[in-house]
Length: 183
Image (cartoon, rainbow, N blue to C red; front, side, top):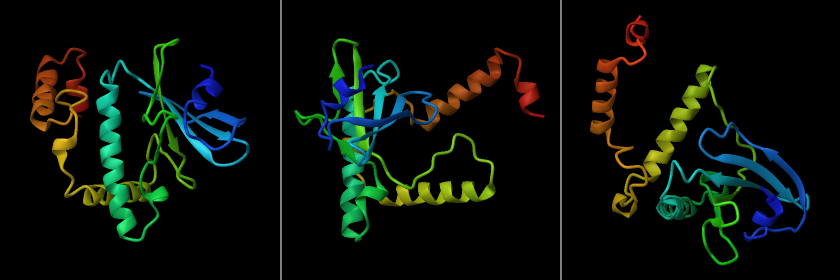
């Protein structure tokens, strides 16, 4: 990936990449943090369009949710750069860039300074803070119009379908693990 070629497509401040590192474990998307001209850090993600083939719908969902949260946070007098993702648009005002040479999709976010990510929680206090963050997120979205969302992975959030799939998987016990999981 030619990071400078991709970054130049976005409305970012700076011209020279002074830092670029892998960020997180990237189980779905490939994520990097980069800095231009030793200024503000950004997040660059290569979107896995095999998992999310409807990139337009995915990005529209992110925009709808983050802009809704941003409006609420601003009305509450809080900092929208700390309380929600901020999408950085391309120079042609799109929320992602498609690189036809590599058949890859990319998006950029402002990096939220002072944040921490966890792949595994080990300390009970971390569960507490995760719970608070999720509760805050849920409260901010409590009056969000969900009809604005695109179903980018069919039935992913359909609890009934997911539960039925779980029961069928348990019944099939393809790998013989159910008995050991119940111990």
